[in-house]
Length: 217
Image 1 (spheres, rainbow, N blue to C red):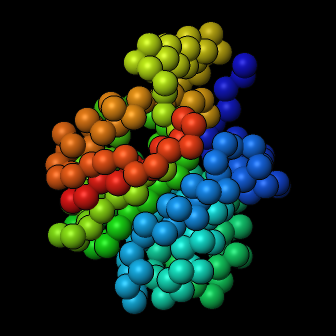
Image 2: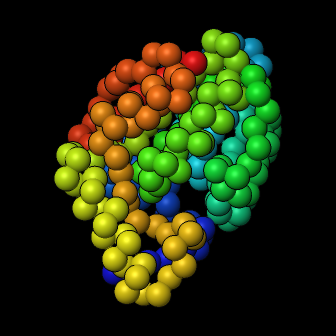
């Protein structure tokens, strides 16, 4: 397979993206609204969305809490433009860039959320992000992660080795983000979240290989 840079991959698939996600991913019609239901319902809640894309989870969340203020970070400017068109009447701050690089104000957010985005990155990449995220949450803040996970440690290792092999064969720069699934196991993800300082991390539900994990600050 030919690897594509992350932003170009999603920009090329913007048309029909929402329909694809809802129809082709097991449990999506349930896990998007379920994820939204875990986000804060209080008036004017401040929420961070990592890899927000076109905002499928936000469609359900704004229906529950139209007063919420959401900061969304995504690599694709095209997806962010589509998101802005969807919710022109909501309080949205959209940042086009890598959530690994965007600075976050400490203690700003009541909650953070990420849906089907973080399974493209290594544990070491996520370690720094999760540490920054933990600091950006309020004292009672929490992180809702709904994502695709590897079925075993062997499958986890294989996906990372395959990505490196493909990058070598295609002569690609090693530090750029390419669209290729490299999920951790859910156990390794929970270990990582705990290691960076989240006090309580637990599995809420799963739909096949997709799990919702709740990490409390």
